[in-house]
Image (cartoon, rainbow, N blue to C red; front, side, top):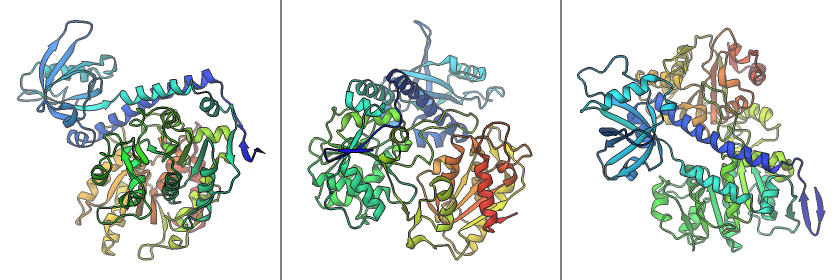
Length: 606
């Protein structure tokens, strides 16, 4: 770091060769495509067709219409119930789709083809209520999928389920931005670590008194930044609050602000805060918009928030103070059209996607937490390279001087935060007084159970552990007897097979458990509950813990699991299995340190 001309310059600690770097970026785009496919494949594998359609779009009533074997490839046309396929089913031309046989149209389904995995295809034409596809025969890793598809197509009364698998358009937009950034010298050199970045030394006026000291430091640094600044916000540290104050300040300075994130939910959350119809969060920029202090234009069609749809989707972006949308939806804007871009949850966004707001704005503020899960990662059954975010890349390139760390956490009881703080945040976190000691009925904030159960592989090659399910159900029953509202309870299972097992067990209990959220660690990222149970599932004599201890992401996954609880965290697992070092490189040492921490604090029941 150096100083000159009333500026502070941060020099790169690492630089990157252009050709190799952008080749890696383009390879990352292809990896993210496959990660998106895997995400849908996994959801379809573990859920019913109706559940998949509800979440992803699609239909279960596609009827075979015509097979055309002419030309380079064979095409198959289906008749659907609606002539508005795009809006009703969220299926677009050039989309990739999953097609499964829902009904063979026979008196008895062929036993050897029943429940065949779906086959993948590309939509080549949509016309009225007709959908035409060509099959990715090379992806049919199980011949049974292709055989089932073809047999059902020969039957007059058969029907298919069709689910959107991948929309290539967002990736095409990202590719354009990668090409654009290579032609913008200053921005390219910053990303490559070949140019200093600078911060003004001038004092910043009107720093909001409502912010705490670390939030104020982040606010000031972001105002002084000339190119880029990062806000590292661990769970519950008021990252969104700090960003909202920054957006207000930029608008008051007459700057046009771009608000973006990788998902529609993250964009809407930053606009709304905790606002509901009749209860507006005064710290959110939605409150300012309602009181005519600024204007917001929500671009793109992905928002599911009714308040945002009613208030902001019809506002022209050209006249708005703040334009908000996903990175995919903002690609249409011109280079440097915005004075500043604010990117929330940027550590969950692949590096290549975040190049879009860099192109569109003169300066960029990135907020995130690179100690939580990366943009994409391994699945239960397959280890993959993790995706790197621009947030993490810039820390690697410029070091810690580029970022501000939000120090005070307002989410968890201090005892819940203790281990994540020491293990993942170098002991820098402090716990606010308001949540320092909060509990549920004076129950211990942290409790762990050693369960020497037996893991079982499910038919979908996931895992379940009924012994851990029994422990969790027993503790849920105890909470119910204390009259604890079960909608404040969340259950995190490391494997999807265990999610299903827990849901089934809860449904059999003699109480209403419908409001208990049960999901995987990855799906819980960004959520919080007063009480969280974590089931680690794996239990064997070989110390085989699968993706829980993959070296580059196992610790991050554990961090997510442990930082969802506000007042009580219950950890359920076989600690001998979790702590056992495998023959391959892993992060079982983190679980060993967690076990020793729990034991030293007398928090584990063995």
